[in-house]
Each structure stands twice: as C-alpha cells, then as structure tokens.
Length: 374
Ligand SMILES: Nc1ncnc2c1ncn2[C@@H]1O[C@H](COP(=O)(O)OP(=O)(O)OP(=O)(O)O)[C@@H](O)[C@H]1O
Ligand SMILES: [Mg+2]
Image (cartoon, rainbow, N blue to C red; front, side, top):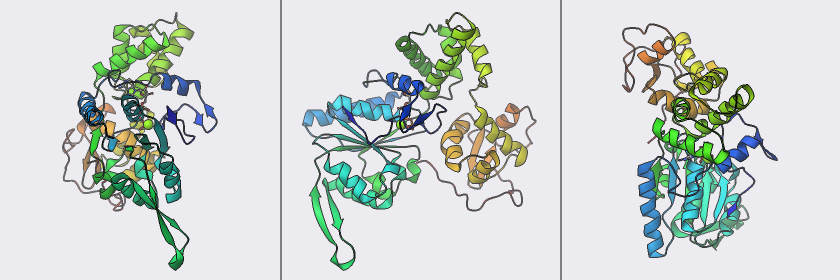
C-alpha cells in the first residue's frame, strides 16, 4: 500500500509529459503501469539488486527493520521504482514524501508520527530537504525518536516523541550534495548506474508486452541504443514510436519504422537530445571547448544549472563527450567530432579529467565550483 503526500510518485523533472497537481497525463499513468513490481521483475543493476536482496533478506530473517537505504543516480534510472519494491519485498507500507515538501521540521514530525512499525518512509530528492527537518531526521534515523520544540526563546520546551522503527529510503540525483551526517546514517547506499543497451532492450520488450505493442527484436535494439542509458527515456521513446507506427503505418514497430519515428522526434543515433546538443554546441562554439563552469554553461543554453549538472552532464561524461576538470567542463575530441568540427590538437580525450589550458578571459566563473558525486 502506498500513502503519498499528494505527489505523483514519479518525480520526473526532465519529462516533457504534463504532470501537474490535479492532472496526471495518460503517459504518466502508463509510466506507473510499467514500473517493475519486485526485485526479480527489475531488469539491470545486478549489483544493486544482489546487495539489496541481502540487506532485505537479512533483516527479514532477524525479524527486524532493515538499515536505511540511500538510492543515488541520475533521473529515470529506477530509484522510485526501487523504493516501492523495497516496501513490497518487506511486505510493508510505503509512505511517500519529498525533500522540497519538508520545509519545516513540523512537516517531517507529522510524517514520522504517522509511521507504523516496519513502514518504509521514502523521501525523494532528499538533498533538497530544509536544514531543520534534516536535523530532526538524524535523531529519528538513529534513535527512532524526535524532539519537537514547542514555543520560542527562553520559554521553549522540547517534547520527546517516540517514532515506530522504520526504514528510511532516500533518493537523490546528487549524493555529493548530501551533508556528511545525513549520508553517514544510511547503512547502505545503492549507486544506480546507466543501463547497458541489452538491458534497455529487455526493458523495452517487457514494456511492449505490457502495453500490447508489436515490437521487433532489431527495432528494440534501435530504440535501446538511443535511450541515453535510461529506462524512463526508453519507455518514452517507445510510446512516441508507437504513435508513429499507428498513425503512419500498420502499428507494428520494425527497425525502419523506429528509425523514421526517432528522426521525426530529433533523437540522434547516440540518443543525444536537443539539450545535450545545445550544451555541447555552447561548450565548443561559444567557449572554445572550455574549461567553463556549469552555471555559465547553463546560462548559455537557457537552462537551470541543476538540470545541466544532473540530467545532461552525467550522460555526456559517460558518452565521453565532456570531461570534468578542477577548473570546469571541457569538450573532448569526440564532442568536436560529434558537431562535425575538427578538434584542436590539445582537446581532451574522453574519461581524462585534467587538461592544462587557460580559461578564456571573462568566461570563467570562479563561483562555479565542482560538486563531485561520491
Ligand atoms: N529496471 C527497470 N526495469 C523496468 N523498467 C524500469 C526499470 N527502471 C526504471 N524503469 C522504468 O522507468 C521509469 C522511471 O523509473 P523511476 O521513476 O523509478 O526513476 P527514478 O530514478 O525515480 O527517476 P527520478 O530521479 O526522475 O525520480 C519507471 O516508470 C519504469 O517504467
Ligand atoms: Mg523518482
């Protein structure tokens, strides 16, 4: 059973589908129906699955609640799905909230006091929780109690409140942004990584089965290769290709249909989308390949720095197009080539983190510090 605080449970900053407070799009509903429901249903992330299986089974054998779990990784890799699976595997209820919803300590206290023994409390975007709530959470995680402060100034008193033993599952796209004390209180951190194309292919075939779509083996490979290593994107591309197949053909998705559809939606053979290409274009054309800070880059493409840093950059780094250096981001030779340009002789090679090159005057942003995922 899932109890929420009014959010849709998807938390999908980069999804173009319209999901607002009182309107969940058809695509949003479909996405929910495609969520894997158990650990064995979950495709990919073999290490995380094995580790979690041990954590959960160990706790079940001892008859206690498992340690708190932190799920970290880029958007759309299955963190929310995994949190729901944890509750299902434990046979308990999931209580759902998110960092931005916990503005005051009282918001969290209300959530905690409603917990029943063994519940899983899922806090999405936990790195965005307000400080007072975070401090209250420390105590709750460690001692299963909180101190609720009543009144202000010298007359303020703190009332201790028992909390039923629970398991906190936190999800974050930026584990580096978590404070040390909070990170230390998680007994297990699962790093979700981008999926391999063959795993995405299995996910696509599973989704096609659920949605009753006829998807050919080679067509699934075509879509998988363009999904940026991300199941949510794979499923979204599948829905768009289905539209194309139904409107312009007989509904069956062949490789040719997939290619034609993806061309219409501007998804290139590497899976780079418009924002990825804008970031690469700005880095190479406006900043001579860098180094340049993320926030400067974000302004250049008219996006939030957090979107560039959490959505675009992890994939571009993994694709070997961008390298992170202590002084900012640089374009690799592959990025220049991707844009059809000849790389300068000293262009970075994908995966290499440092390159000695003076930042261009006026373009370097000293406030733009590196926040490394750990
Ligand atoms: N391993 C998987 N197998 C099958 N489908 C998956 C898997 N992981 C994710 N999905 C699909 O991708 C969609 C997005 O997953 P989910 O919402 O769990 O990602 P998330 O990491 O929580 O993303 P965000 O950080 O944006 O909240 C789900 O609806 C589900 O259909
Ligand atoms: Mg989520």
